[in-house]
Length: 104
Image 1: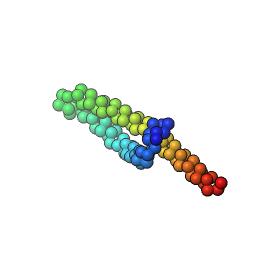
Image 2: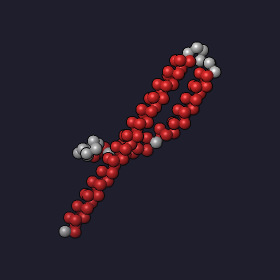
Image 3: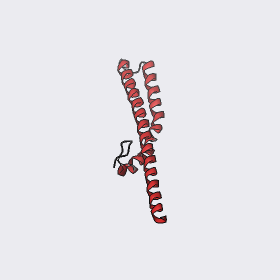
Image 4: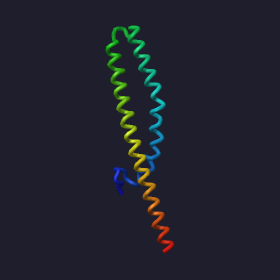
């Protein structure tokens, strides 16, 4: 069964657990910043054996990819949280229907 947000209901538990894994990107943020600073220092001190432009290009590409990755991860996290909320709602409705069946 597919829920309205696009995730199959039976697979929601695994992606919901993946939300925690998305937080590991936050731990990499300081490493990315440090790498950027180190590359800038190498370029400023001209310690790239004449390939400063290549280093600058690579670090810029890496930072662009990092920005894309963090943006997409955030979007996916939001979708996973919504899918989990829908799963919990569906479970609550089923529990209520069962209880009403027992009472009535």
